[in-house]
Length: 205
Image (tube, rainbow, N blue to C red; front, side):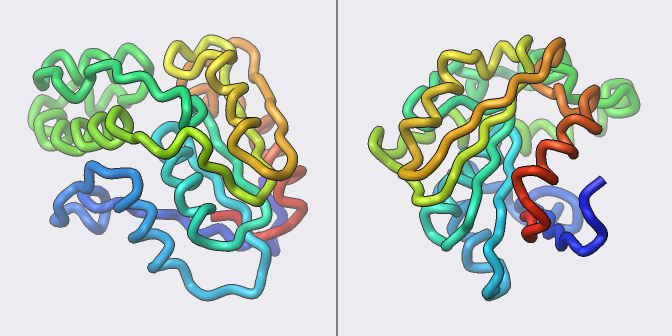
């Protein structure tokens, strides 16, 4: 658990949760612009955390706002993005790919109507991730910490290590053994300890 005095702000993308009626945004820069403009002004030194696609979005936010540290999880460096063509899959194929990664709970997998409602959001995520083409020399001024599971087929070590090229400060890489793309679910205590160390009781977004 994070310290009690740590302020945590969670981001809700369009098309999800209490923003379900909004159209999903299939663009990393546009999502980052929305987040940067929505965050309250702060004189604190914030830490950004993003998993998977959220890592690239957080990287873009860190280019727009002054932050102290950026923590990216389960995502390759911006200069190492590979177009896997997931955005071109039909509904059944797309759901199958995500399910194979362990990204969908059983109650969703067993509900065809829920899967159909979810797929447009998944396709939007696929599109945002696969069409993200920042300048290869894009950097941030803050420290970057990258977290991955050693069994993550979407974020292999060699392409995650290249995050070091995208910071003008310090870089750290932590690998969690036996974890796939959603390694966080099985390593919650270790990830929490890592975040406590990284945040050093700073606010985390």
